[in-house]
Image (cartoon, rainbow, N blue to C red; front, side, top):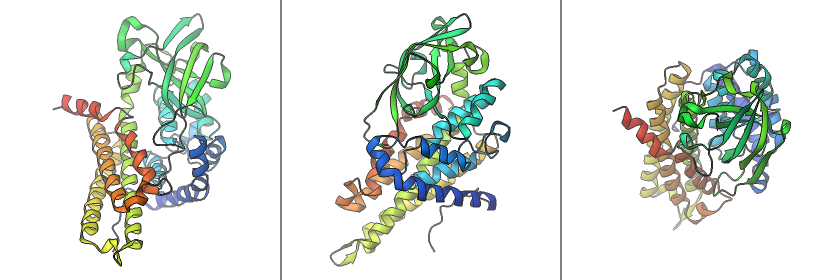
Amino acid sequence: MPIDFQPAWIDETLAMYQDTVVRFVETEMLPQDEAARKQGHVGHALWRRAGELGLLCSDIPEQYGGGGGDFRHESVFYDAMSRRGLTGMSPSVHSIVAHYLLNHGTEAQKQRFLPRMARGEIVGAIAMSEPGAGSDLQGVRTRALRQGDNYLINGSKTFITNGYLAGIVLVVAKTDPSQGARGTSILIVEPKEVEGFRVGRVLDKIGLKAQDTSELFFDDVTVPADNLLGGAEGQGFFQLMSDLPYERTIIGVIAAAAMEGAYQATLDYTRQRSAFGTPIAEFQNTKFKLAEIATICKVARTFVDRCVMDLVAGKLDTVTASMVKLWSSEQQAKVVDECLQLHGGYGFMNEYLIGRMYVDARIQRIYGGTNEIMKHVIARAM
């Protein structure tokens, strides 16, 4: 009997939704993946198609154009992409942006942006990291100066996921540098509606080749004061911190699915590949390695499923979310490395799924807060 990694929270309705997601992933995303890896982004058409099918912002209320579901619906999409090694679209960052708007935006901001995001008309990005400020958000140097009914934004950002295709960017900036973290705010920028905004190069990463990750530059970018997220200055740091469990659970979901996808690809490969006249799946070392990998996958799935359900119930705390991000991303790296080893030389080839998964996995321990920061968060709660 094959080992079952189906999430424990999948019910009949979610299984039907999962079928729709998998069809989209396999018939519309997979065929475009190689081209997207070469050009560094998937283009806008794929985002619009996902919006047409109701796959974007699936846990945003229907009154704002979303699917009216919960985080399980989002997880189905991340799961289907990750186990197939697809990284071109980042619906996770898109949804994180949508949740900043939902949880902290004014009613006018929700009505203005969320329906368009759900339809895939605009792609969401959040501009936090800077050349001199990564995990330390208090070190942000981008400035937003109030001038009458507008804000004047100056600064630069880097490592911005969805930055090249973005139609809405949440910009983390200092509105009052003298107040430290309390002087941080988030401004909503629509790239096509302003002057002085510039997208730099699509960054040349070692992995996530199909995903557009860019530098962004703000040179006297003027936005209306109504574009201040939530309408009150100095709330940016609080807004960022309050949504971290959501983001870190996403990373856990992606890690668990990637491990399962790597395991299945390796199981298939070792059954087909022979050495000394015998399928390498029959060697004791291979069996034992796959047994260890399957066990890690099962443990990861159990932990991640618990966090998903706690998030849906509104009771997932920051410490546990940090734990699932830390542990699952570390295990993902180990599992994929073991799977690559079992592929031998072919595992080192980009044409093989496992080779792409290997380099794509590395960023999981960095974004969403480095794993060193996760340890710090956990240690503070001891």
